[in-house]
Image 1 (spheres, rainbow, N blue to C red):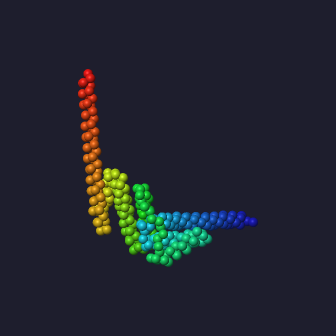
Image 2: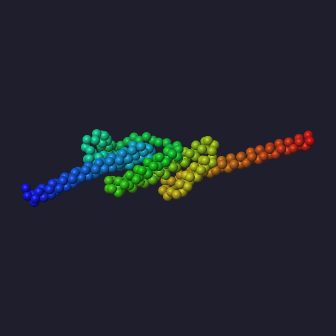
Image 3: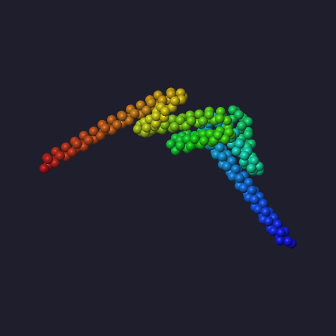
Length: 254
């Protein structure tokens, strides 16, 4: 075997190794890209599902609920395109399709939530803001039409305001019943400030209502302050009287 033949065989072997290495890298890269895409689709599907199922019923509309179903179905089908045997996603896809077929006749089954504490209010606010973020991102990616996004965002913003107004009203009422008008006044003051920043006509009639509640709480605070001052004066007078009596007794016995 000549030296030239040997060189050719060596070069051929090197080329073959390079080709095999390139193909292996390409296969691994494809697997990684597929796994990454599946993970991203699964993560977004889970977020949409969590919001769709956890948001309080009183804050949702059928249109928004069905919009979430449509968006989630897109991600479910994306996962199935990469993992056709995924039983969980297959079941979820069937359920979402059944709900979408109902259209406006779909009945929202989410539980209602009473926001009694500020922590509960913050949790619901986070859910609403997350909902808006997900819908806005979907519209930017052209997964949902902008025409459907606008009324959904308007509804979300409206519910965010109502969320806090309901909380301020309930808190103020509770503090008034507990004989704590100062705390009630603070709650009503926050509601009045919030309403004064709004331009939507549906909030116009609520402002006088909260102003009346604020006025009532302020009057009770004033009454409490005056009563406290009166009791303080009476106590001071009693103390001075006792001190005078003690002084007189001391003078008498001395």
